[in-house]
Length: 612
Image 1 (spheres, rainbow, N blue to C red):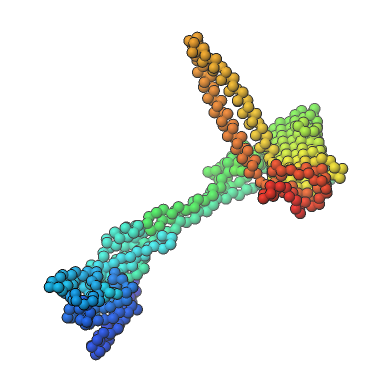
Image 2 (cartoon, rainbow, N blue to C red):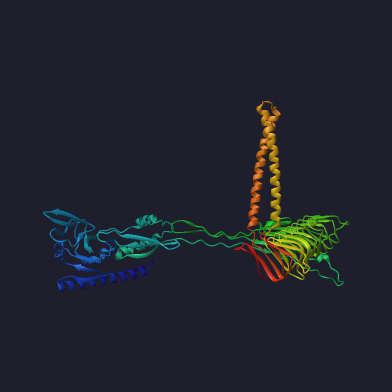
């Protein structure tokens, strides 16, 4: 607080005080002229100044005057400075006496004592002060009042403000230590502004006026951090389609086929900008206000990737294709088969990605940890990929359960015929699916060219969409959504394991009964006794394993029950003899439906058809 500001405040207070004194003089002159009670006003609160209360019971002693206030006023809210025009009574001085023969008009209130003598009850002031009548009670308003403090905080508890009310009479003003102790009791203990408090105390003591909203404490809000980021130097969103460029002779240069991002040795793959953590805040009570957690951006160097500069820059160690699986960054070798997979090549297995420029012939196997790209056809064979399988031509199978494709993510194909295809992600077929068996933990989509599913079986965990379902020839076609084949397969496997463990437990218990019978007759050899202990340990292990398998099977059942509702969409037409299943509910299409969407109605638990 500057000296100029302090001088202005003091001048303002002085003018207010002079104005009050002039009002009091005016009231006194009016009362003296009228010889009776007069009205006065102070700070907007009206009261009546009574100089002679001898006509009341109790009747007031000579020279005792009082102020009469509205009944809703509170004694503790009054400021002694407002009533300096009243005569001040000393402690034990008589205020009034009560005539028991008359009806009592007023009763004693705060700071008033009574003494009875000769049938008259006299009232004395317990303390030095002014007589105040509120309603039908008369009180002594203390002349000696200590300075009063009142603190409050804002809604966020980041700032605290103090009101300092002046002392009256012989009362004492609080000092800095008293203020600090008061704030401590109010749980205000951080960022105390001692200099501001001292200035406010001095101003209140000099002006004898309240100093309000003094900023005595200031906390600080938490500062948000900055999220980290990752800059990639390869096309991480590239997933195809494959574009094959022809040379001048109309041939494909397969060395230039870009089906996944290709990088070179020592190429910078990504740069991580670390997150900047936020700064915790502090409220006026000293409580830490934690800054919000900042999302961490990080990469994990995988195969053929090295990290430099404190794990902020990532480089390829080989020429190959880059794969980003979540936060794991790998660079994989690409194994190119520049021919068919047949008797000349044998089966092909590779821990990276495989590109086959020809076809996979009947009876052969291709397996890769990454992606598999086949530019020709996939004849009846076993093809398994940790990620995606792309077949530019068709997938030709040998019926249900014989040969097939299995992908950890997505399968795309030109068409399928009598094929078996499984995908943990989506299955996308460009043309048609004929008498094939398609199982997807994601979606099955046939939206281009013919886009038909004719015969066979197609199960999708999420949704199935095709231009046409079935055919005009009425070939039986089964389609389903809201069923995850992989979950069901694991459930079946776990049930089989439970049965095997149960059978093993029966055999173990049979051995235990035999051994225990021998032991009861004392015919159990020492080696058999040890066998008995070993079997008991094994029995516990099997019980524990069986319980874990049961819990896992129940978890899978729960996941199956809480899959997406699933829907089946016939973009153009659904022919008769199409069997539609959604979440275990089935219907048979008996007449041709155009542009139809089949879904499960939650209220009726029935499959309903609507517009596609």
